[in-house]
Image 1 (cartoon, rainbow, N blue to C red):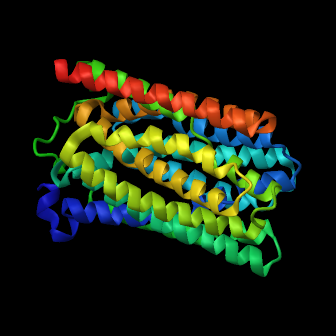
Image 2: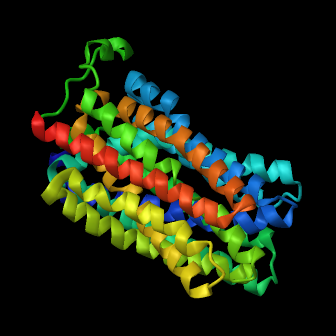
Image 3: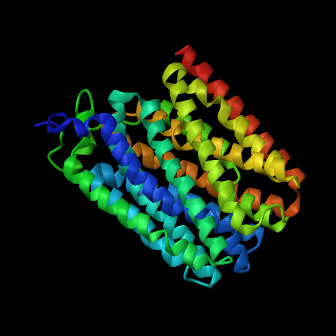
Length: 401
């Protein structure tokens, strides 16, 4: 009996929506925490460079460790187990982060939360990619990302409310995030029981191998996939983390610490709108929709690192729009470039390349911010200009073929 035979509630779109609720709840957890990472670390004595390094290292861990978790998922075919394990690590790390008063412990927990994302993401994206084969890659991943951002909106607002009530108490603000974490894990177990093999959503389900070594016969990753990864790595190298943005807002007294999560929530709303718009566009015009990403990324520091509240807020919203493209359309392109049998490996390698870029970007923007905001804006603009040139070259080569 196929997945489609088990009931209308498990159609591809409903699978995406239920998985989206899981992601909504977990975004409630970790985006709530990320919205105050900069001010929390600063309260423990961190400099802008430390904030940039830690948040950059966290993103590097979230991306780079997928070099291991992606191939592991393809070898073992334990997509559900890895997805659940990764979500569990995040659900535990965030509440504990609010209990520590030691800087190095807090830094380790920030990175640990991102490690949870590394464990689950290739497996989770592969599970979702099967359903999006029939709904449309761009639309399917965009709807999932938009639902993510509902949680990413609620989480920071909840944290802001608790901070306001407790007069800046980070412990209670992060402690309440344990509730949606538990709910997400419960729903994830239910979804696994209902749809144990989402690969059956594919128009032509991939053959089931006799054992873990069955992937040896799988086709190699296409060259276009690696070229595409190079473009995204360049644009990510010039992308500032929200940790540095929030550090600037609080250090320059542009926003109070308890208002930073509110701004982050606004950025997540912009993320959702951007994901839906670019996902729709991608299904119609293909990778040309990605031209907007370097443009948005270059605009972020030019706006966010000013001394104007209005411009800084605009910069944070533009940051959210760029993240929406990164989290939805970039993933959709990978699913279109790579055969199903190698998709988790492809997501892992792709994220690993971006992890190096994220670490470089976090460290670069943090260090340049400590030296000169003008220099930071100029360097990021140059990097994003190079990304646009690379994208144009890649499109030209694709057209020539």
